[in-house]
Length: 301
Image (cartoon, rainbow, N blue to C red; front, side):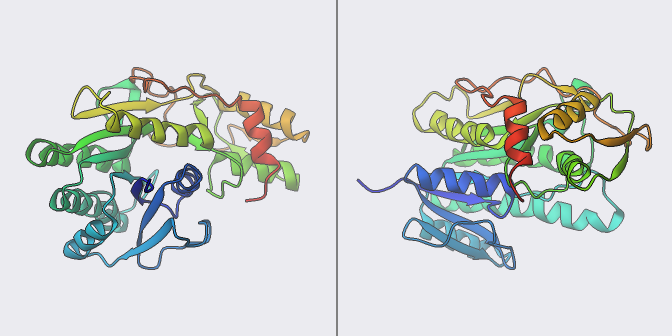
């Protein structure tokens, strides 16, 4: 029996690389769609089940790649994430999160590919509102969802969008709060942080990847009830940043020299994460936070 075929974007990122490894381990033939110049440092070597395709920015070329890959599903994780933006970032945000994403949907429509697992963000729901973007990045994610409606209605795409909260895991190189805590723990340095009352919702990478697999299964086995579905991928147990730092100190066995209140909260800081999300049926976070932090701390990035 031939392997299932997937086309995946965003494989040069932490979550995308982890999903690539999971699909390969499950026996999928995986086609990675990468921008010209994107790093492949964190990816497995090419093999009979792993194929790299470089996109030059042209829609027709992307259609050719889609036709050659002939996937039964597309996993779309590629995006440009900026918590805050400067005027010179606008073009990059629109190009990465809207133009490229729309080209991807157009290529799916042209090749008769119908199943899409899309990636959104909990930051589309500031103060738990139905739509209130924390930042321009979050606004571009919502804008693509609106564009997708055309491809659903006219070309029959079926979409499950997973709106991610914070993800973390062993080998995570991203400059996020856990790597700041790790540096303080290992170097014995000090760090000025906000007052630390904002709630953090962290999902371990293996659990996040499992959500993508379950989302595909909903598309493949007919469990999907609507042509578009959206789910939050949350730990269900957010905790204050101060408590997260205390737990990290306990797990690492090293005191953390943090100056709480040494810097102000960010504009539109998410103090309480989105909590009126719909949970993905059949999925829940399984990795205990202390165990996940230990794996993160004890693995070099």
